[in-house]
Amino acid sequence: MEPARVGIVVVNWNGAEQTAECLRSLLALDHAERSTIVVVDNGSTDDSARRLRADFATVDVLALPKNAGYAGGCNAGVRYVQQRGVQYVWLLNNDTSVESDALDALLDAAGRRPRTIFAPKILRRDADGAGTIWSVGGTLRRPWLGRTLRGEGAHPGDYPDSVEVPWASGCSLFAAAEVFDAAGLLDERYFMYLEDVDWCLGAYRRGIATMFVPEARLWHGVSRSVRRLDPRIARYYDCRNYFLLAFRHGGVPGRLWAAGRYAVTALKIGVRVAVSPKHRRDSYYHAQTRALWDALRGRWGKAPYDDAPVDARPRSAVHEAVAT
Image (cartoon, rainbow, N blue to C red):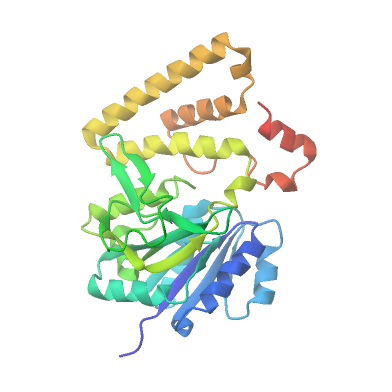
């Protein structure tokens, strides 16, 4: 029997240097020859696609004409590798670095439970150089769908057992190609933030569980790309996308909770903006207000803000983006 082929999808957006670090770790994987590695360049403006093609001849680079969001970039990559006949798909953030035996551990787990989504042990470097856990899957609190990263801050040796978890971070999602056929692709309405939770919960309703695999380890730069964005964007997606998630997966209790949360949040914003000049000038409040309005009218997809990196914009535009 021929070894299983794996399609590894790395989404890049104006981050050629950190994507290159990720690719070097992927090319050093045990049995890397089993893999088709594709970088989906998400409409970058820093010449990423050309630079990565020049530096990594064995890596495919799929350049999208515009930023399709993390969900859209992942979906383009999944379709690309499925067309090349892979049996497994591994979605990765570009600010990750995988340990050499991580793929073998994921393949071993998938061999035992084929109709499953798998999450590795994701570690981060602390300021002193020591490592701690960033995520070993995610937790979920119903009915309001509160979410936390399981194990965050724990010692790397903790959480040694493979267990089922409600969801896994989109930083690293591994599954058989047929799982993507059964569960569908990521919902591009989210654009970024919570599309991973949505996908895992939707898959679970189709009988597809999510499992944590402790033997598979990778290191995560923890949103280095996101930190370069207009700071209003994270607030906007976090607020708006919560309501999409809650109304899709919360059931009747979760929808009632989300509706109440919407009303209370809107009332608090209105009162504070009315009585406080500081809040009227607060860009975060503007972003949250816009997120609530867009959720109410069903406007999803890309946030209505400039998604160019802050450090690539004129100084006046940067000042406007971060002013409060």
